[in-house]
Length: 256
Image (cartoon, rainbow, N blue to C red; front, side, top):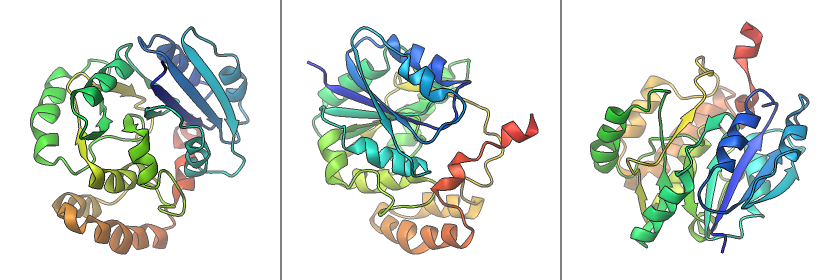
């Protein structure tokens, strides 16, 4: 029985998508792979449609409205399995990735989300140990990973409202979704659940919060985090014009 759906929304990722799909092909548990083309013009769609692997049922979707949140919202309709993972088209996932998340979910029915720690090429075992053993337990209701490494009990994600522009039209959608999901159960960061996101986005000024906003996020108690997101951060991002469309920017291409 297939217990997993893995979602990747992509836009002009021809240089990275193939390697990501190859990593997913090596997973040790069967899964449904939902690939959402968000208007690519660089051949990404051909790479996606050429992918096949044993134990992987592939679903191809197209979302013409620009913006990752629209692509993820479209994918929500394809979440028919017990668990759902969301990843990025430029991230490498180890073969045990889904199996480790599944083990963690099965160990405690109160767990509603399993989050992967991002590492570099070295694996960063010490950093993972610090975060998994201390930081994420001390700050268990805060988000310590990005959209490259989030896994959910599907029913809980749907109950929380899922990915939707109506809820959050800005960047940091990976943090905002966790604000809603974390109200419904435990969020855990296992030591052995990790991924290697691409380091290419070094200039993140147009896709992230300020230092003051980030510090206030960590300082705000979970009980008042709705105020933080919907009364404080959202209006500030809107005033600066930082919407989910900024995630389509690829400044490294201009530098090249």
